Image (cartoon, rainbow, N blue to C red):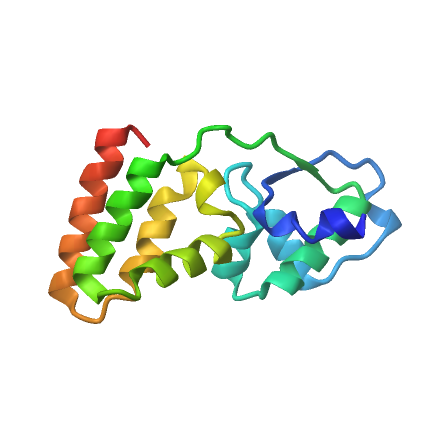
Length: 156
């Protein structure tokens, strides 16, 4: 289970039905995460919304899973293609310069994925994270506008 728990942050869960709710206790963080599970958001996304670190969310996910309170949702197999990442890099490079590639790698990793296997349902979140790295507001607006158009074009 320890090797699986290292990847829990990228996983998507839903609450499972549990008949013996009085058989254990959970803390407020666990309850909050349990309530936030919607079958679409990864634990990493929930962690960001709740201000939790990745190790915290992974521990909470592992505990909820071991108690049988949550279950995995099959992840979408649709992933962003190379063309999207090339366009993303070109657009971000225009806004921040040569550090764009590093920012993209870091943001993709922070979301619990790799560029080779990045789910399309998190593309907008990736764009939002990267836009936050652009200091000039006018450049951030152009970056977001161009990427929204690309996302629409790709059907993501």
